[in-house]
Length: 141
Image (cartoon, rainbow, N blue to C red):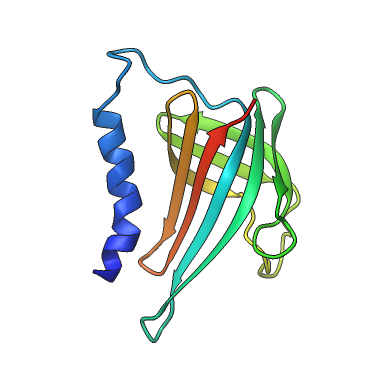
């Protein structure tokens, strides 16, 4: 049952690709201001699960880059950088991430699977079966 928590976002992403309500028209690439919830779900060595959440804002500007605002004081770091899209994968390269050491807060960095229908933007990144980073965002501008 615990593994379902990590597999469910991936299954949702795959299922969303099968049910494109726009017919054969592909969804647009995400662009604009998105607000919503970030979740970091971690399975500890004793099999307990820790979940932390934060309300954040992600601004994506084609040709310029991205930046993260919102509740960046405790869980998620404010960050900015460049991004690239390939199919249903989006790669973020955070220019504020230190080159050495382990950051205390999560940065929007690395490759994520995503779905976007023009208003809802959801991303997920997993690391093995112990960590899941999830973004559940809605377009606000």
